[in-house]
Length: 129
Image 1 (cartoon, rainbow, N blue to C red):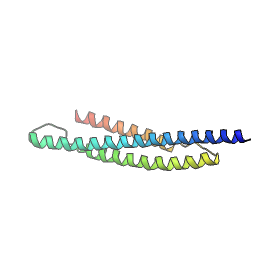
Image 2 (image 1 turned 180 degrees about the vertical axis):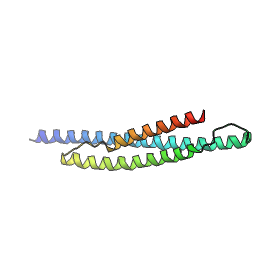
Image 3 (image 1 turned 90 degrees about the vertical axis):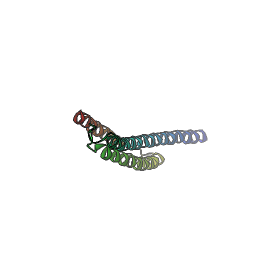
Image 4 (image 1 turned 90 degrees about the horizontal axis):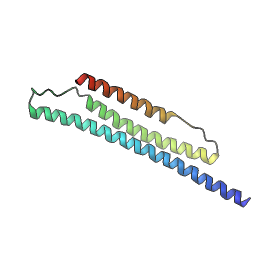
């Protein structure tokens, strides 16, 4: 009986560590999305300054989409971080109660976001040509 309890505790520890690794991976992803958003927004500012430096006759795209996209990406990364914390705590409780139910909300949100950003960037690049 004692050996079975020890085995159960070790297994639970492993599952909790796997949950923590998943959480940290979501946090890394959200930080990456926020950093990308910051770079996109600052690149738009760089283009505006470059256009000012070169004069009004410079033919640089001046749509202003990069600021909107950058802010959107930073907000999306922040939202994903919050959702990752919520998911981590929810799964932690389910592991302790042995009632784990997989949830796809964060996965679907990430996939839709990546698709939307990809479409937006494709439209932006086509429009700027």
